[in-house]
Length: 136
Image 1 (cartoon, rainbow, N blue to C red):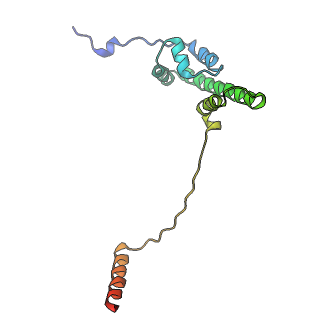
Image 2: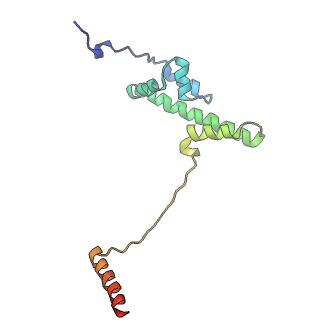
Image 3: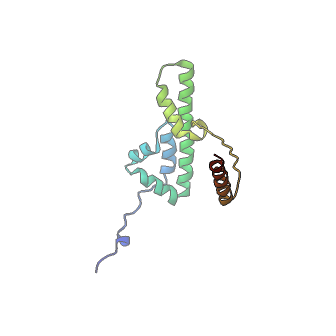
C-alpha cells in the first residue's frame, strides 16, 4: 500500500530551549537569520515556529527588542567616542529598530476639484469655442 505524503512529514526540530537561546543570541546584535544558521535550520523554519508556538513568537519579539537595544548602544558609543562604522550601525538600527529609527517621509497633498457634469462642461466648451469661430 502507498503511504500518502502527509503521513511522511518530518517531525519538527523545535525545542522549547530555543525560546531562551534566541533571546541570548540576538541580545548581542545578531539577526534572526543568524540564529537560524546557528541551530541549523532555514530562516523560513523560524517563521513557521513563530506561527506554531506562541511562546517562541514572544521570545523572538523580546530578542528583536534586545537586538535593537544592542545596535542603539553601539550608535551612542560611536557618537560619543568616534571610530567605528556609522553606516553599519545605521543599517542595524533601521532594520532591527525600525519602529524608532526608520527614515520616514510624510507627504500631505490637498486638492480641490470642482465636480461638474462632464457633458454640461463639454457642451459649454463647444458652445464657447463655436461662438469664437462664428464671431471671426
